[in-house]
Length: 237
Image 1: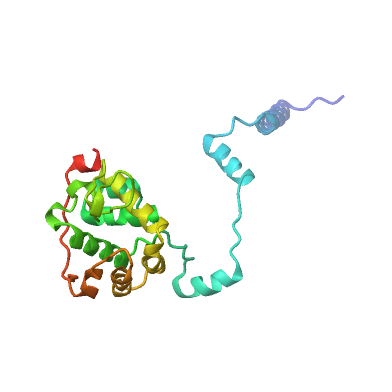
Image 2: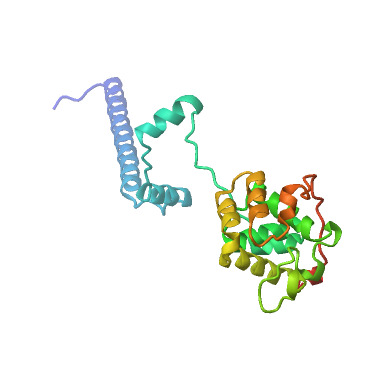
């Protein structure tokens, strides 16, 4: 084999060294790429972490969501004008304890109407308090715990001079008297119909139980009845 001159051997050695260096760098680069790919694959294949609280709540909402269907009529009638569906109105009715706690002559009148099952309307209450004024002084309307001078019942004296243990008992007795004695039939019908106060009062004057008939109304007073509170003891409190 022919030997190269020294200068050519030097060039050949440098060329071989350069090629070896390029092969080394390529091998290292390929190794780096492989390592990088391996790390990426490892992270891709790793199991996910536990879900967050927000993710759990969102999943629960999706699983338990509810739909509300609104009729076409409702949306046409309400949404077109106001943009919202109106709810039905509601109210509350006062009861026995409310009237007893109030303690006034107006509350006693309402209690009588309540026990009798009559409408507790303004006209009916107005008639009762006027009737009470005809039978007792307004400032002491609870006199003998018998505001209407009710004379019916074994515990009462003649001519409505009896007494009741409390104003609550008096309201029960007044309601019972109205409902059980035929002389009050016209008054009961007027109260039940909740007609105007003049019609109810006319029925009172015409009743057979009122011997004087309140002079056919000429002795009846129409000015406003003041609100007066009875002592708590009169109510049994």
